[in-house]
Amino acid sequence: MIRVFDVRVVDEDGSQLGVMRTADALRLAQERGLDLVEVAPLASPPVARLLDFGQYKYELTKREKEAKRRQRSVTFKEVRLKPKIGTGDFDTKVRRAIEFLEEGDRVKVAVQFRGRELTHPQIGRDLLDKFAEQIKDHGVVERPPLLEGKSMHISVASVHKPKPHEPTPAAAAKGHASTDEDGAPVLGAEDISASVETPANPAAPGPEPEDGAASNGKVN
Image 1 (cartoon, rainbow, N blue to C red):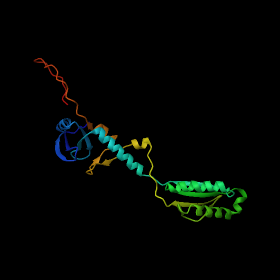
Image 2: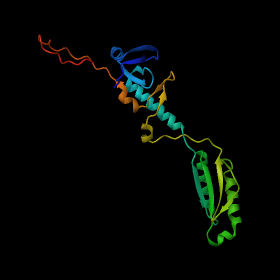
Image 3: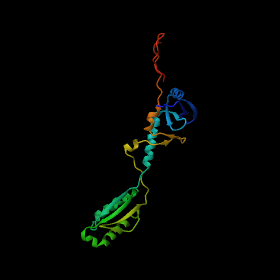
Image 4: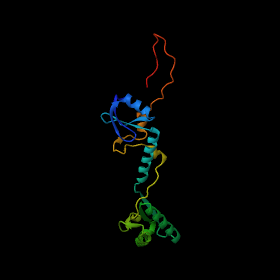
């Protein structure tokens, strides 16, 4: 509900209608079959817009969803190998690493040593060099094989751009600050729900009050 006395009104086409009383703006919205939405409550005076609130909320949610879909953080994936890994398992690990890299993620490829295997670090180094050769079209090795404790690994950066992903329904439902076509700040889809004035339909005329009786009708 809009609680201020005056608002700066923008019509459905984005044209400035100037500052007017909130009651007058509501009456104008009613005449046009639209809602009065407070889109910039912190402005002085607050900015309200004449629009179809249902359509506005749909478009705002759609725009937020598209913005979130285009955002994707790069994650660090890990592929683990054993010094005595078989050819089939090795090829499977290579394909998995390529999938990660095609998604735009970075990949850590590690060889896990156990017991006496630590006395032959060259086996792990050769294995990582072979692995790097297999994925060279999809990633760039950031540093040579490094032995740390019982593990030797390489880090691979993707040469692909991160692929966008669809946000979860919960994430898509969250609103955030946005701007309209004119660059004016607007509220998120959830935030504006309490700042909408939907003009009520005029009440059907009732019987005329008798002389001396007080009218209890409400003025919208």
